[in-house]
Image 1 (cartoon, rainbow, N blue to C red):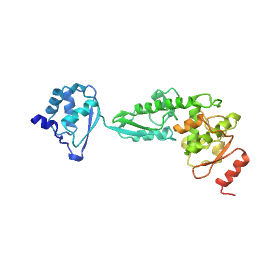
Image 2 (cartoon, rainbow, N blue to C red; image 1 turned 135 degrees about the vertical axis):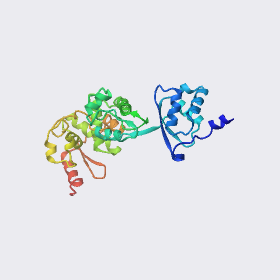
Image 3 (cartoon, one colour; image 1 turned 90 degrees about the vertical axis):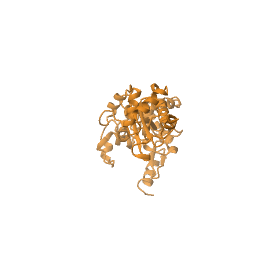
Amino acid sequence: MVVAVWLNRPLPLRGGNEAVLDVWIQPGQTVGQVAQTVVQAGVETPALWLHAWFRLSGQGRRIQAGSYELRAGVTPRSLLEMLVRGQQATRRLTLIEGWNVREVLQAVRSAEFLIDDLPPGHDPVALARHLGLSAEHAEGRLFPDTYVYPKRSLASRVLRQAAAAMEARLAQAWAQRQPDLPLRSPDEALILASLVEKETGRDADRARIAAVFINRLRIGMRLQTDPSVIYGMGEAFDGNLRRRDLLTDTPYNTYTRAGLPPTPIAIPSWASLLAAVQPAPTRDLYFVARGDGTSAFSRTLEEHNRAVRRYQLGLP
């Protein structure tokens, strides 16, 4: 009777009812070591009692390694159930569309209880190699989503999940591509999608912006997209894009070089992936930001110049 009461009575925790105890059960621990670990974490009950309960229950060997959080109200019975089911404490990492590798790694390195096992710095090539990606460059290769991970997970494990998600979604989008696109591979679709992502946040404009780039690629016209130039400038970009920047050649300067840049420049969303392979049926060759988040599209340079005067310069 006394045992039954103890099994169902909340365990006292060091720190009282507001305490959250962090318990890390390591692989290979014996039942007795698990009991000791729980007590050392701050559960104020004899380890011998927990050890006996784990053994007599017949489930002690089913306890799973991992990271657990114990809160007020946990009983010996519910504790064992948690450990056997592997109900680990989790955290979340959200990757945002439009982020580049530097921003992704900043989020990873500030995430709670995520072990940074990644290469130092923010080199996309080193990151791709570390994650075992098929691509040589990690930029744009991680799908934007929220990833749930157990506490003390390796950052590389979470990012591999994001990479696998992007690979699957890219394949899904490529399978839905329109015929006769001037895109030779899913990788080129990914690059184009990253340009679309950085040019607009408006779903209504994505397919039309993609169409502008597709139309330019078809006739050999340079893409002339500022976000790609900015990406190529790296840390030299101070927030202001000047005319001399547009004339300074880099592999990402789409004013000085024809075709797509060599890699994506950011994480594209699913909407941008679809836009890249399903561009709008339009002959537009130009667009300019209106200043309200939308874009004005034009077929001719004359129309475009009028739009620039109106929306960029504020002239009639």
